[in-house]
Image (cartoon, rainbow, N blue to C red; front, side):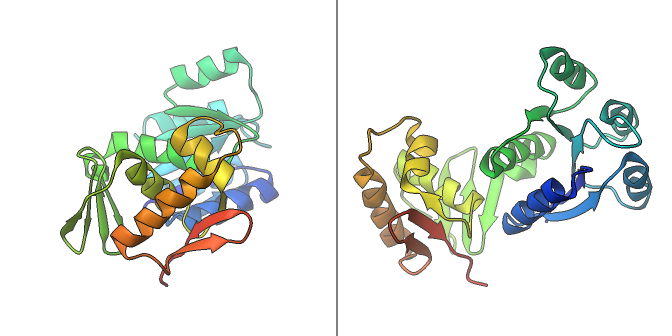
Length: 219
């Protein structure tokens, strides 16, 4: 389980991020200022740091100077959206720069991309008895291959990365098909039905009445 350190002074935002990370299977800890973050980093090395730029005691850019030598990947989360700030953060060695407000799905996708760059083992995504090889684009269940179409595969990734969350049909269309399907969401229903059958997940991929779908953990 990857360990994520959230350095964010807004407690409501920090808690929302923590809840989303926990749902996605990450272990997270929180620091609400730069000094506390440095103290925590002396005790434990996280796999990734989510760093706000505007902190009450230390500027996030100042903190980045200390993090850079540690080799820990860093994603800036900030309301400062100027090009100069973004360029500064990336030049200092940050792995990504996300401007608030952002959606949890976007944050999780960018985190996974950064973590994958730092660890070749992350080409394998394991969810219970399912293993997805992200490089080969193959799926196995109990070591038996599952033959999925490209869209079924991308839909499965979306559900796993957002497990226990209700996703609207419109949002699924936007993220998997990458365009507005002019209100026609039947294609989502058809692909969900096929995915349920191929994985034996009839009771796992739940229909959310008049909204969309949710992949539920067995635990």
